[in-house]
Amino acid sequence: MVNVLFVCLGNICRSPMAESVFREVVRQKGYSGSFEIDSAGTAGYHIGKQPDRRTLEVLEDRGLYTTHRGQKIDAELLEWADHIAVMDEANFENVHNFLHKELKRPPEPEKLFLIRDFDPEVRGVQEVPDPYYESKEAFEEVYVLLERSSEALLEHLIDLHGLEPDPDDEEE
Ligand code: 4NP
Image 1 (cartoon, rainbow, N blue to C red):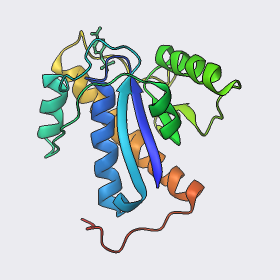
Image 2 (image 1 turned 90 degrees about the horizontal axis):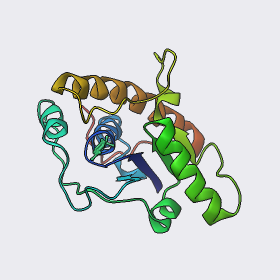
Image 3 (image 1 turned 120 degrees about the horizontal axis):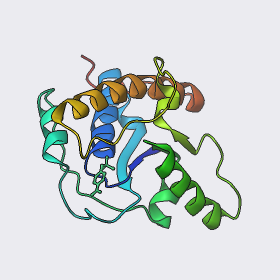
């Protein structure tokens, strides 16, 4: 099993969306049996809360539903994760420092990276911008970035781990 954790600041806008989008991409390609997928925030403002209404709407418009509740990163979650895909530089630094302290050495690039390292259309800043104080359109843009990046991330992880599709998974 390959464990993937998506991380943003509050775990109510970007990372729960990333979790749902990646889970759907994995399902469509027939790899559900190979992955455990979760998300968390570096801050604890929204622990136990459901995702932001705009994240839920963007997902629901595409037939995706989530039961995720906000959680904050901790040693157990970061150890559980084989791969930690972070939305922006500030949160990357935060997780990097946390892991460095826990592991007593810097995390490997395969363990901790920015999700947009995998965006084939990235230009300049490799971040998923924080949409929290923005309009619904900003959430739509986040979705587009996440979908592109998730597809490329999955291809990378299939190669890295030598994964085979599960014949019982439904492909669409
Ligand atoms: P997220 O967005 O990190 O994508 O979940 C935010 C959610 C909440 C806050 C900031 C960003 N906040 O300040 O409460």
